[in-house]
Length: 463
Image (cartoon, rainbow, N blue to C red; front, side, top):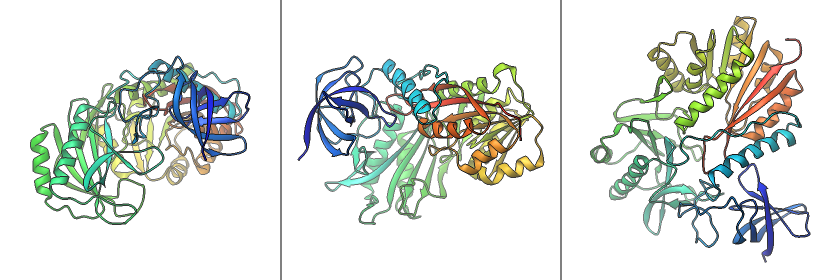
């Protein structure tokens, strides 16, 4: 039987939940949908010796940061399920979201990295807190005999069907809804993960600042019955679409995109602008989902790289994606070398460098673990800096060893995960580097996710 408690919400936790405690109890209660200052009634569904997890039943007294979330699918007391697992902080005022993200970053640096005196700057706001995402991946499913397309409920693969989404641009939402309608009329069978049958998995839509789009249907096999009908109808409905693809993902995995791309029609890449640069982006290549906030992030990274008037013989951009940050940094570096595992993204990076007339940036395809040692053996100069933007899992031990055992004088660490950043900061701080400051940037409004830029300088003699 579930235990019902009256709890006071104290703060937000790194993974998006709220931290609460019951009166006269030291046990920590984690609650989704809570806001600091709330007095809530919550039902415990999982209990350990020192903490528990609970569902928010109702808010008795709202805290000062609570607002009514505009999305009807957002988790909120009194709203019936299903609830979307996407935007976990819609119930917080935007100014409060920024303050709590700063606090989360500070907590991770102090608690995980054990670094108490590092300046944590205030989180820089996104210029647009709504309708900011330039890419959406929507899974298909089936419920009650009808085709569904939406987002996963929190902690599950149960699809929450949707008609609108306030963090997506209107064009993306309309394309998704039309694609769902066409797929249903063509009797396409959605992939059933549990039963292992069906073949229609996801729809990818990428948009740009010019209101253009490129889209891809993700399927389990190469078949696409009546694919020409689908392509013709979607093009007719949306002249803004410049290219259509099929991506084939045959594996029974949570990894959305597979290795095979079939062009159905149109352009191979979508053009996007960041600052003064024009980039060509393949459908599956990595690009920050918030274009305007990405410009703020990249400028924060460039500022960290050049702080105190420093200059370097070469800057290595590890995990460079399509080269957006590399080109941004090339304005303030003698030479930039990007490393990226995705070969299609590397081709995009070379094309973008040529397109923008950037001659001091080059790119290598392969894992950072394999390419970095080879580049350093060739000799890149005596004064080196590294800019790293790894996946959420952070840096691997071989990469950390490469950064600390080689002649890097400065490391600029761009991260989307404060916890793994703090773990790596602890490693770097015991291996000859000092974390001088951290600048959080809000690329993901209405969610608990936060991007950050950390500046590390070597304090000991170089290897």
